Length: 327
Image (cartoon, rainbow, N blue to C red):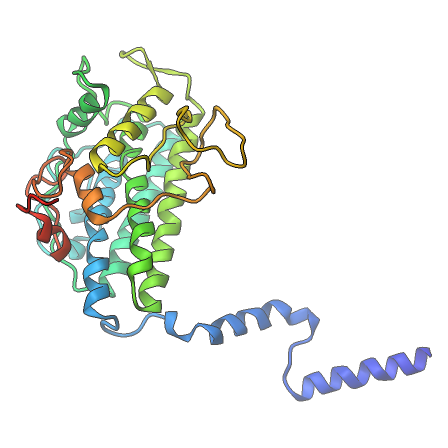
């Protein structure tokens, strides 16, 4: 029986070799080959290879990628796209009021990584869409302060400064990647091309990770009071999330670090902590472009620019909302 087993094994091995089929030691290689051949359309092509429909949809997130890239670059490095990747700006105006933040070593390291990820996102999008010049953006302390005042329903004293320290910067950063990830989640089902959907999914994955890291860093200090306001970090996040829900005007799609009593529980279990924002099925929320503009403009309308985009966001979709009272 031993000899029979040996010759059977030898025969099978020779057969596999003769047909160039990997043995068990090369299963991972076979898996990679199968993935490669199963999805031939997701590989980048030379030039623009997607429809005008997809181009218009994928153009819109460039506004958010520009916003995050500049905020993270300036906050961590004290310089923006004009220094790091001037070709991506296409001559668009530099952001107003951006500056280097007073960050501790760990936060600076993390935000620097985020910054270069956002630069990569802009490059990835511009490989597939026509793109547009960097829009005018307001990253001044007063812009963030105005949003925080709206979140609390009164003026904070002294005015909130996102660049003052690491906690303030993380609270300000809390405003951005989550909005982007809900936008990508809302965008993906409407894309036609496998190339477009692959790009969108890849961008969504990194934006979700950034948001998770920011929430985790803040969650570590959830009960700490933000000085000199005497308000906890958790309360700040809840106020910001409530403001985004209010401005978006489409119900609850946002939750702070402490789950609100009205939040849907997962599998009947309602916990106090809320590390990730998710619906009752633990799936992330989604937003349409008009909802995102309502939040970024800080006015609850997509038709009147303001907030982070004093002249309005760029691209055909964003421009189609301007001065249209229906939105």
